[in-house]
Amino acid sequence: MWWARLLNVISGLLAGGVAASTTSYESIATVTVGAGGSTSISFSSIPSTFKHLQIRAITRDTDTGGFGLTTTMNFNGDTGANYSWHWLYGNGSSAAANSGSSATTTALGWTTGTAGTANTYAATVIDILDYADTNKYKTNRLLYGIDLNGSGGVWLSSGAWRSTSAVNSITLNQTTKFAQYSSFALYGIKG
Amino acid sequence: MAAGSTYTPIATTTLGSNQASVTFNSFSGYTDLVVAVNGTMSSTGNFYVQFNGDTSSNYSVTEMYGDGASAVSARYSSQTYAFCGLLGTAQGNAILNIQNYANTSTYKTFLARGNYPSGYVIARVGLWRSTAAITSMTFAQASGFTFQTGSTFTLYGLASA
Image (cartoon, rainbow over all chains, first blue to last red; front, side, top):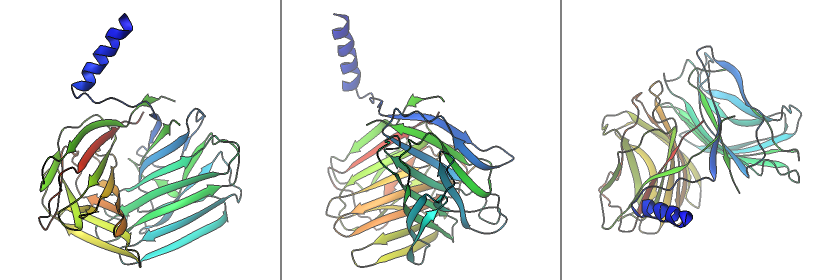
């Protein structure tokens, strides 16, 4: 039987130490910012075929000042006061907490611009759970950080979007611009 | 939108004896790397990562942790290695996210969560001030503590569309 031979081949490959690739975590799209910078980036037409979404990004901004809160996120173009968030963060000398309610966006974290260490980017991993479930408001969690060899911070954050709509687009915003080489990758996780 | 399966297991090291260090040096073709460390160490302490064998003062870390009594933040600047996890004689784990590890236009930033249920929970951001693509990484402990038999180090690669 051809299928039995195929199974044997696969079994042999695995026994030989070849890593099995998983099909439960898929790359959906990537945006990398070009030389002119960008005030926002968007993922649109997000398929509803996954269970969860994950965004993995590195970001820098074009602010001429220091290091500050500049990066936020909206879903489905909604800029109403439908967001809330909580942070736990450390700035290198103390840990503190902050929150926002009835906000018009979800706060992600601080980043740096031209006044910060050259070539240095914040990193973040954002998980958006049950993004297509029309029976739930949408919650997300993130780990976010930037280290500038003398300043910076690390964040654990939760966020909520009070909507039962399936998330079909995500916009990340900058108060100035995302700088060149900032990169955003969207992944889908199957359930 | 393009799509493709990823989060590929690249290598796993399961220690058959106590070891002072573990190195991964064969990975390419991905956007991000994830390392999962799960195990014990001969004594409780932070362990570190160095990239591409660089032992110069090109590393820095900002961390936040809870020890069961208080929440604390600390920073380590211009270090010869970057703390990335904490283990001890009880079981613990650490997950590292090394973002855009092959981007030759940026310094390399990693995010780490350290989970040591007997004492600490930690979030860290680390910086390696180099634009070189990461081609190897070594995990070790500055005071010579050893990773114990049975500890596992698993490297995954994530390729974005």
